[in-house]
Image (cartoon, one colour):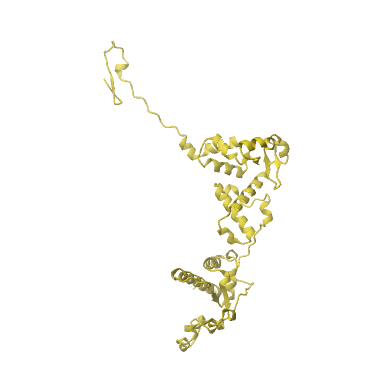
Amino acid sequence: MKQISIPRLELCAAVLASRLRATVEINMRYKFSKVIHITDSEIVRAQIQKESHQFNSFVGIRVAEIQSKTEPIEWFWVSSKENNADLTTRKCNPRELDTESIWQKGPEFLYQDSSEWPVKQSTVSDLPDVVFARVALNEGEINSSSQVIDIQRFSNMKRLLSVMARIISAIKKKSFKAILCDPSTEEIQQAELYFVKNAQASLPKDWEKRYRRLGPVSREDGIVTVGSRMSKWLKDNWDQNQFILLPPKHPFSLIYMSHIHQKDHSGVESSLARAQVKYWILGARKTMKSIRKQCVVCRRIDKICTSQAMGELPKERLEPCPPWHNVSLDLFGFLGL
């Protein structure tokens, strides 16, 4: 039979304890102000204090479940001498399990003040089942032009920004738990700003000279904008002073224009008007035509239905004859002679 190590068995016991705690809290009318978990395994307590992604699948899944039902700070370590649960797992006399035993009443330190309990919260550095991995990103690299994720693997703008926002949150909080939290509006904006900088990194080095007719200007945060030559007209008509410049064939430009088009699958001009509220994309009309041409929904909307075919003419209408020799009447769409 396949053997399981003692630390893994003790971790499974901790999982059962967390499940039992959750069941008790759901079914009890009382609201507990504090819950304490005590284990005699230093390894298990140290594993619960770590991030679940640091371990292999067996340990990582169970640590994640424990952390979802309990808080790591609620777990304490006690020596095996003070653990009455070992009475039934080791050799002992049945008389030691009578009504006055610590198995029935619990250890004596539980009757004392919690500050006098012989428990600790020390951790162990050398843990089994650890998968060594490092996070190669830091907060400074978020604002660079490095490629963190592959944009071409996404077909939805909202999902792309959400994934990047979760990555930013995990890097800032230095914890992979942040990935499970819904990103905030600020993090979504930071994710979009990152992709804008990533797209503008592909602009030619002489962008000031090449696009001088658009009035390009570099902002303090490094974003290139256009429209400085007609800022007053933009303010009066578009309620803004500038547009963010995007290259024509960058994946972010394509997924943004596809996102705008998929809102209502309108015409090219209407989609361009909404896309240019925020960004000025070079060659946007040609790109939008290509997106609309490849759109399955637009093909169905613009499909040409088969028109009604005219019936064959009767021979009386094809042969010469005197006037009023043949008379026809149209009754409810049927021709009668």
